[in-house]
Image 1 (cartoon, rainbow, N blue to C red):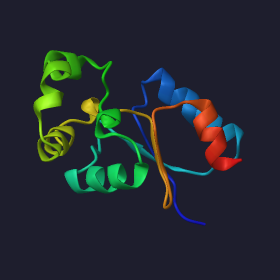
Image 2: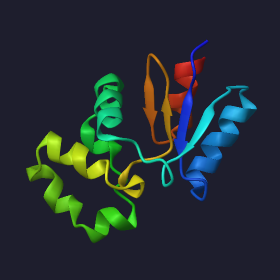
Image 3: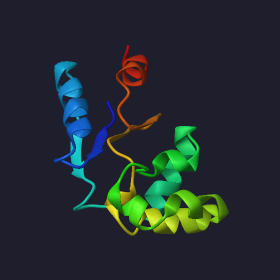
Length: 119
């Protein structure tokens, strides 16, 4: 079986809920702290391409950094290249938790979405 990487911020309550869900369902993962080990631009491009989600879904739109930078108004005029580069600068800009698997990517924790992918 392939490795599953759980990209999270340990102090985030939603990440804690997702991690508990994974443990309760017996799903083994490698944990990656998004603040200590921010996704690279190349990883973000790959994950976005495999996810089927719009690029905006990869932004932590409720985060302080997102608000400080005024990204709500800036994102619509930024190119995809600029958005990938920006996301790669700071893990706090990236939506979490994220579960990276060989054949799918889950962004944010919506239990019903995660349930559908595994059962």
